[in-house]
Amino acid sequence: MPVTLDERPVFVIGSERSGTTLILAILACHPRIAVPEVTWFYPRFRSYLHTYGDLADIDNFNTLAHEMAYGLRVPFWNLAGVNPATWGKEIAARAVEIEQSFAGVFAAMFERYAEYENKSRWGEKTPGNVFYVERILEDFPNAQFVYIYRDCRDASAEFLDSQFGPTNAYSAAKMWNDGQAAVKPFREKLGDDQWFDVKYEEFVVDPVDHLKRMCEFLGEDYTDELMEFHTTPTAQRRGRTKDNWALAHPITDRHVGIYKHMLSIDQQRIMSSVAGGLMRELEYQDIAEPLELTDEQVALAVEMDGRYRAVTLDAPHGWITYESYGDWLIDQRQARKRDGIWSDADAPTSPPYPVGTPDEEYYSGMRAMRQWKEYFGVKRDYTGKKSVL
Image (cartoon, rainbow, N blue to C red; front, side, top):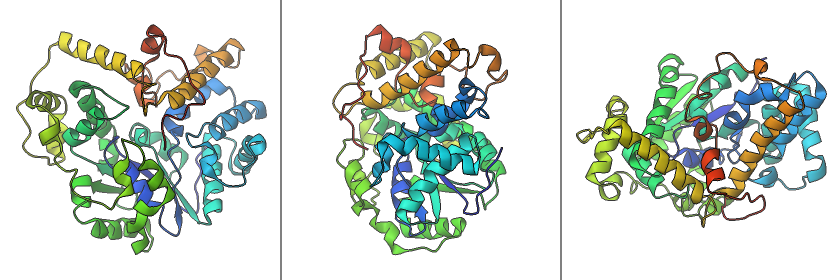
């Protein structure tokens, strides 16, 4: 059942390395909007609700609520005064008062955070939600979306220099292209009161003008506090990492056009062949002549990407801790299946994208495919502190 909130929820979405974290940090400075760290709740849970059994059964529902409540990448969102022993029960009880469903748990989590921040409204940022807009609307029909997009070449250049995500030009461009294609229908059909576009390259040149228009879209007053985002604990914490160091500094346009010195001509041509059409639709210029890859070259690119992702999970600044939790969630699904809580017959006959596609694991929040983690014997680590969010 849908949950319609008096204070409309705000979802910040966009392909990774496009500026979603920047928008999160900025909106979190608004005196009325609470925006915690990423959750990945939709990619990790929403398509797999059938694996929990009938959520009208309180035991099944409590399992879902506890896995979500204890599955935050930043435990308890660093909320002071949380009792870890009772946190899951608190969230489950709050959710029941809203609705005994995934949306109820989701809203309960964010309302709890907003109360702590003494704010009236909440927002959420998970880049992977570009693939879950339809399901978000099913759960929160009056949600508002702030969608930030960026040149495929710049976003991909940052990906190739990051400690997570795709590791070659083909895979990076495909992930970007799939994300833009997924949101395109909603950009076209949702009204101006529900969808707001932010073009990264224009935003960083005149952020105040864009933020004033964004606040008008959200029905909120603009405040100069938004431009102080880089001084917040979240920005400073993220700023200590290789991949998010810029968040701890004021907005700059120095990251526009970085592909010109970070990507080879052949890499740019591969990206053009994969994503050139949508790049042109989004009015990006100077797109290189496409370099078409053979089926064999694509297969090799996909396999090598999968191999590299797996073996670098536990590298410095790697994502092994978060990946281990994601793997544990998959194990729990299978354990519930063995216990008879669900069967293959319970799965949707026409599962929503990306379920059932070759990219399901990546687009459901995993950084590496299980087949390669098992092939290389990658050991899980539930306590490591190799990444900081």
